[in-house]
Length: 279
Image (cartoon, rainbow, N blue to C red; front, side, top):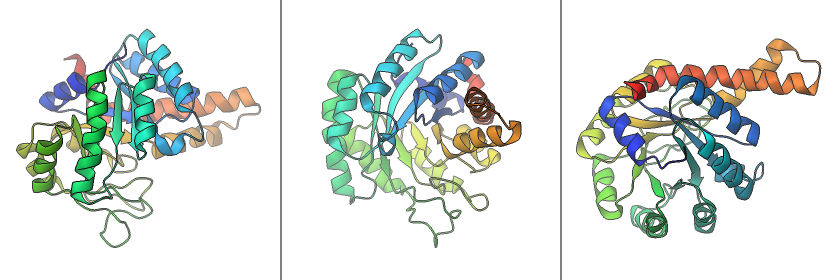
C-alpha cells in the first residue's frame, strides 16, 4: 500500500526503531527493495535523490513507484530525497510522490525556513509530507573529524525554532554522519541526539547511514531516529555480488547485483530493529 511516512515515523519513534530509506536509481533497485520489505513484512521508504534524475526521470519513478507501491502488501513511502529545486519538488508532489525533502541546509536559517515553508504550503493541501534538514550532513570522503568534511552539527535551539516556525513533518539532523563512504567509523554525537529528541516531538531522520557502524545505527534507532538513509552500501554490495559470483552474461550480472543489494538491505533492517513494527 502506498502511504505517507507520518504514522510510520510516529510508531518508529514510540517503539525505538528506524525504517530504512534505500535510494533507488532504477526500476530494478526499486523492485529489490520492495521484495525485501515484503519478505520481512516491514515498511520501506523508496527514496529517489534529485541528484539521480539523470539515471531515472521523475515521471518514470512516479509511474513505477505508485504502481508497485499500491500493489505491495506492506506500507510503501515514495520519497523525493534531497530536493534542492522547488520546481522539481513540486513536480514530484504533482506526480504522486507521498513524501518530499527540501534540502536548504546549506542556507542561512531564515532562508531555510522560508524555502521549507514554501514547499509545505504546496505539499500539505495535497496530502504530502515534508522533510527538511537543519545543520548539514557533509561529504563522507573521510569520517567525521571536523577537519575533512563540511558537516555542521544541528543545535537544539535551531531544531526547536525551525520546527516551531515551519511545522515540518520530519527533520534530518547532523550528529556526525556524512554522505558516502568513510575511512573508519564515524563518532556519533549521541548526547546531541538525545538532547534534540527530548526537546522536539517531530520525528528525526539520519542521513549518511552507509558505513556508519552497525552499533551506531542500532543505537540511533533506539534513541530517537525514525528513518535512516542508505545508498552507498547498497551499490557497493551490488558490485561485491558481481565480483564474488563472476557472472558470465548480462542476466547473471543483474541477478548477482540484486542479490548483493537484497543481503545488504536485509542486514540493515535487522540492525535498525525494524521488525519491531510487527510487535
